Image 1 (cartoon, rainbow over the protein chains, first blue to last red):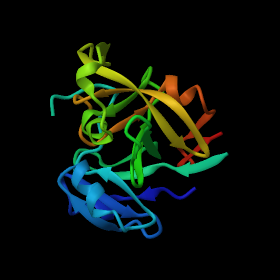
Image 2: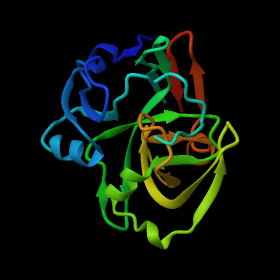
Image 3: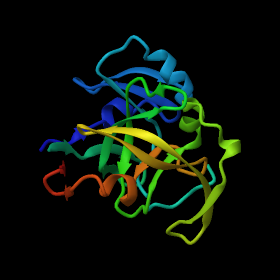
Image 4: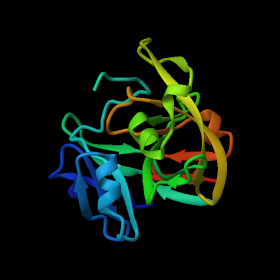
Length: 66
Length: 137
């Protein structure tokens, strides 16, 4: 199966939340937090939302103080 | 049965990282609030239960001041506290009540963790890293 490659879509974002189009994997909205992104995507279809960071590596079911 | 791909995500230290991310909806019946679109969640066989960020819990309208905290130990032996509430989970053609533990100590980029109790006990999960594929049955 082909990977869901989000690297290009997320490249220019480092914080906050984004809404990504399911079909072409492009960012259609960006907001500073979960509450704001839910407002921005009210009329958008076929999207999913996720938080952004420049470092998704290194998680081992542990916690941070972030 | 659903087959979903691994997600390829940016990493400064490793260039890329491949993660088993699912997409789910959360519905809190007490307030009738449901996430308007799918939210990304980590499928994590190392987590005993399901976790969710406190920010999402607040958006769902959970009254956390009425819920007692429970302590968990992370892989690095540090402890953290979380408050549980039953959320209706919509995931891969199943809709069912699931206990989520809400905490503000999750990493910002992992807002939802789908663990053993609440997710793995409802599905058969097969990870195929080399084929970039996760089967959820």
